[in-house]
Amino acid sequence: MSAPSSASSSSLRPAPNPRARIYTGTARNLARLARVLRSGGLVAAPTETVYGLAANALNADACAKIFTAKARPATDPLIVHIRALAEWDTLAHVNPAALRLAKAFWPGPLTIVLPKKDIVPALVSAGLPSVAVRMPAHPLFRRLLRLAGLPLAAPSANPFGYVSPTTASHVRANLGTQIDHILDGGPCTVGLESTIVDLRDPSRPRLLRPGAITRAQLEKVLGVRVLSAPPKPRAPDAAQLAPGMLTRHYSPRTPVTLHPRLSAAAVARGDATAAWVFTARPRTVAGKNIFWLDAQGDLPRVAHNLFALLRQLDEAGFTHLHFELARGSDGLADAINDRLRRAAARG
Ligand code: TXA
Ligand code: MG
Image (tube, rainbow, N blue to C red; front, side):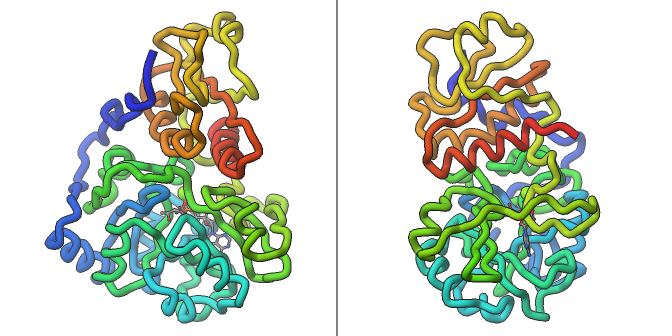
């Protein structure tokens, strides 16, 4: 039996010839990485959600390097990270509802989509007339923002379509041959990407991606219902109106099947070459291919451990991964299950 603490990066196969160096957050390293960003380079850095791959958001050439390193299609827009509210007005047309959300949840795991201003390069917004902005809470990312003195575009620091990284070694394992600089801030506390809300029309807010800030929390501050994401765009090359609108996203290579409830009987009947992942530690099932996301099934801990365990199991040679869905009406269960469904989607 394995505890989630074994979901460390130690089992990740390193990239064949990683050129990336991992930096600790010393004043000297941060100053150096800020210089890299100011001169148009890329730096992978920790946020409270997942690691991001950052570049100067106002420099289209710098941001183009993000798309190349991630093999990200130009139709998938980037999130712009800011340090202070005053920067927001320079990037977007901010409305009072957006400001209320920002005051309630920033710095934190919430991204707000608004009409963009011309200063934001078309490449960053994938040609859309809007821009997604977030103020991250991670102290190292905030120091990098302050030292660079720039808004930073930063998608998750993973190859397009793969599981997002929650440690510096995840980033190195995936992008170590593509980038030079990784700032290590330890494991990300939240572990799931930010909630994204579209507030272009403040009377009809839309939840584009569920995350740690829940729909109920947004509704409480806004005083109106938060609608769901619009249906998927038909044209495969249409700019993505919401994240992960491609069916397959956040996907491990090993096939994943989801279960509303996993039982000892299901595991006993199942394939011995598969891994079985419970949300909480099962009382009646044991075996070396049995895992759980948190001993008590505590949802913030489940979210925190999910991507690391997905990666660990993806590297471990199982033929199949069986995951139990998170239960309950807590909005975080929605966010966890959203990522699990994307991991399970094929093609
Ligand atoms: O937690 C996070 O949000 C992390 C950290 C690094 O901040 N970033 C992140 O970025 O998850 P990424 O690229 O993996 O997801 C960004 C998503 C894109 O998939 C895109 O669809 C959506 O944000 N997005 C960006 N700009 C948008 C816009 N103008 N309208 C609608 N969606 C947008
Ligand atoms: Mg991503």
